[in-house]
Length: 418
Image (cartoon, rainbow, N blue to C red):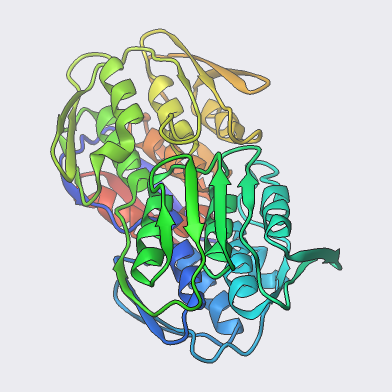
């Protein structure tokens, strides 16, 4: 099995460009199913999750071809509305084909989702929302069966929680529904805005972009489109924290810094100096790391996908900090691994007390999930000696050429046994 070997102590400097957002590209690929014809999506990262989504679409009869960071998706001849467990179990995001299939074909059969083991991430809101739009839902043999033979009908849907996945599924379901759909307590993440932009370009009528209330006036058909994926704010945040850990200067480009305002605010409080431009951030740190409390929340709050990376930073702070996880209940598994490197962390419920230590030590560690795995590599950058990170398939799911980009900044990091 491949592993990542990191030798700590090297300073990082230079410029790194992030790719398109994983959390957006996957949903844009699903949205292409809504239109007969070929859509082209640019700035798509070369990661395993994209490969899985391509296989999911190909299983539906969709033709998917890739040229570098551009993906062509021809949904002219959809021959199946069923997605098999062996693919969906690899990636929870596959659930978002449910909405487009029901909207366009009136039926869908989608395996219950899998993915990172970071929490239950229940699909109740997806199901209840589709039921509000008139779909009949049944659960049989590990599959979700959705049926709307006469099409979907617009309705008001109030989400219990601003779920990104449920918002995306309901958006894609409602664009072809009869009448008007109002999604209240909708997620506001930039990736939602990216999906709205693509759907509108396809001919959808959506208002409220960026707000917690989205109004969709259904249309009869949508047309194929050419669209470029928004920059990956989480990949950007990961490299910014790498620069904060090592001192920099590290410049991260290819994304909109307004999408990371809460993280940048917390990094300034931790003692970092940030030069923010329209599509880049340069981070430097000369003094010690100051302890900062954070609590994850839906956007525009502190992103749960940056919690582990920030915990790695706080592990070396000059004092104690409290990190509260309000989005996913199992997202502190990373703490057990970084404690093997000498971090002093106590977990109580959904709060972590992080007592800063003078240094971390290299150790063998295991990726618990996508972001936790990336955070372990970051910790290895500043640890004494070698850190060997295994189960790195999690990292490959969401970061394109992660070790190559770190090495280009000066890190001593190698991919072993590939």
